[in-house]
Image 1: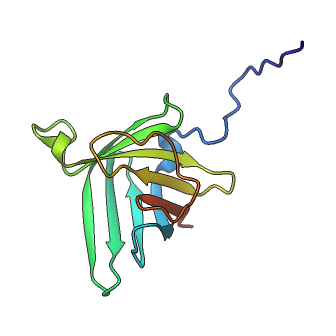
Image 2: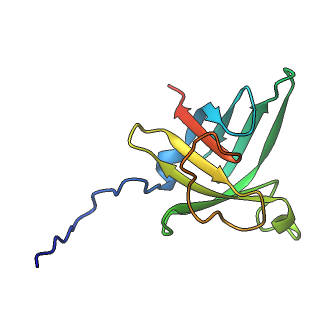
Image 3: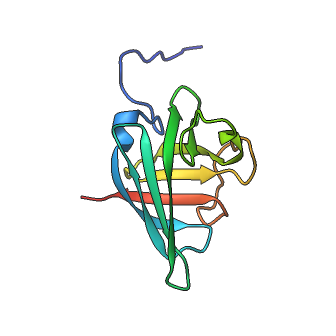
Length: 135
């Protein structure tokens, strides 16, 4: 029996680091029926997430985010306001996050108060979002 051992700092598929997600991402697809939107991650640990509804109106959520790249898949908390504020667990979205092989950012947002077990097979499943980097 033979085994292969990889060493070094080569990034594994799907691994996400803070510096890679910084900037503005445009919504390419989602499973929640939004017409579009954008997600911006800033150097100061905050985000702004704008979603455009089918009736043409839109809404923005913003606050802090916490990325845990050590999990597989990586996990992220999107908090409304400060992630450390009392009661923030009630307004926090729990997500799995990855960069796919086409450099698209994928978020799978849980419908409950826990991180999802993985990613759905169908990118049109509720809670699934795909973004492309704004150039």
